[in-house]
Image (cartoon, rainbow, N blue to C red; front, side, top):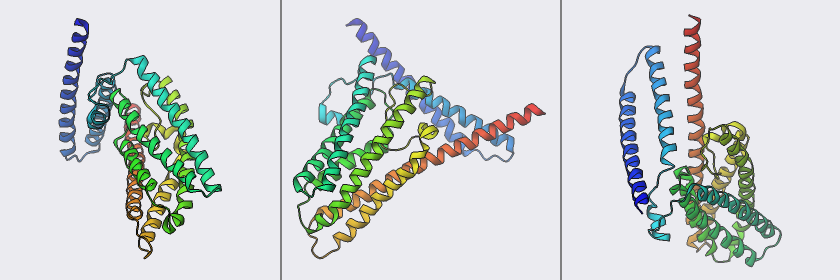
Length: 316
């Protein structure tokens, strides 16, 4: 008990020091952004300082992953105020179970969507929709637990699963009728395509994460995601065209549903709401992925400028 109390006090002190360092780093970053520089040397020095600040931020993030986190409002509501901070061995075991869960259920969704494409039965549709609701709802809980234990999951990709859960829940209560029949096949093809993309992402991201962990460039609690992160640039950029096609498919779903909602025979509220949700998913996915690509390319430009300056100074 005494050892546990000392450990908790040490963790609290570390968290307090981390918050202070992050606050000071933010102040320095704001001061740097306000500087008006004219010469190339000054701009280069600023770029070097920004690069060091980014490295410092990443180092602090790595330290924070090994310290307890708050459960957050969602887990407080779902699971209560239980302690979800796991031991290191349990963390990795839980992460591996999460990855296997995603793979198995994604394969089930893919098989079920193919059955729905080949056989037009409302029972099959109901099973697929229920599977989607259960899958994404479970993902939100598991990802929240992983975040408490140090997994870096970008805010949008977690929110994306909450929104997708709501979207699947709305479609599951969409009554069978003319409008549902007009959209059914398109939605089933969309689910099938998304499942294939997610399977590819899982397969290639696992290999990429394993390689990065072996090189010391990735944290042990990093997980596969349904989008695109900066660490995927090497080896996974070939997936970008498929991801953008999936995002355009979401926009097409929103467009189709919006026009269906304007038909005189459309009385279901689910049609317009689903159109709005698909449009939100499209905007969030395409903007987040595009920002990752932009920041990655900008970072590489800064590094090239620094390397060019160093080589020039060395020659002189």
